[in-house]
Amino acid sequence: MPAHARRGGKPAAGFSSHHRAATAATADKATREAAAAEAAAAAAARRVATDAALAARKRTTALMRKRTRTGQPVMKHRILNILDKLEREVRGGG
View (cartoon, one colour):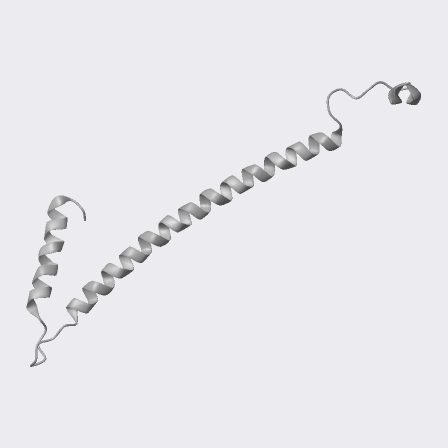
């Protein structure tokens, strides 16, 4: 004799409430993990871009701090920096 017949009720349609809750929790967990992975990838991309910009600033700063033997700034680096800025502005790179 089936269990539902002994209880006097009818069998549950579909899955049990526990199974439905577990399935929903699994789907929610998968969604959260996908969002976390996407956020981690975006953070890594930002970190790479930030590190590259920081390295470029360090190189530029090192060149701008160079001095001649008499203590004067090396004009070559300053002029090249100004020319690079002008070229970027003409190309529309800001």
